[in-house]
Amino acid sequence: MEQSDTCIFCNIISGTISADILFDGGDTLFFKDIHPQAPVHIVGIPKQHITSLDGMVGDDHLLMGKLLHDATHVARDAGIMKSGYRVITNIGLHAGQEIPHLHIHILGGEPLGPLRCKA
Ligand code: AMP
Ligand code: ZN
Image (tube, rainbow, N blue to C red):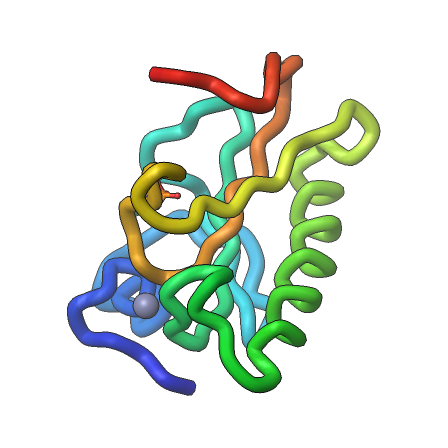
């Protein structure tokens, strides 16, 4: 699995940086966001270092399907399946992507408001 020494999320995968890990899907990992934006805020990543949804090549898109599938299990375990939740992936500058390792945000635990939010 391709990883990057300088990437925060690759360092969480290797255990170099600690995180509150909720689920290990083999090729995916889910952990609590360090700066939660909702009562439930979980980050889900593929273990392979891919910069964003836009950086996928070859069969990488299959991993996105797996990531979303695992996200439904994680949401169920977090108790937000019935109340509903939002899954977001930020891509690049205008989306405010801070960490260049493909990730999804799972947000829930209260009504989330409109989709588009300006800081
Ligand atoms: P994005 O803005 O889409 O790149 O989201 C990156 C997310 O990663 C932010 O919500 C951060 O709070 C979160 N984050 C950054 N470092 C850590 C970390 N060490 N453990 C958990 N979440 C983190
Ligand atoms: Zn990475």
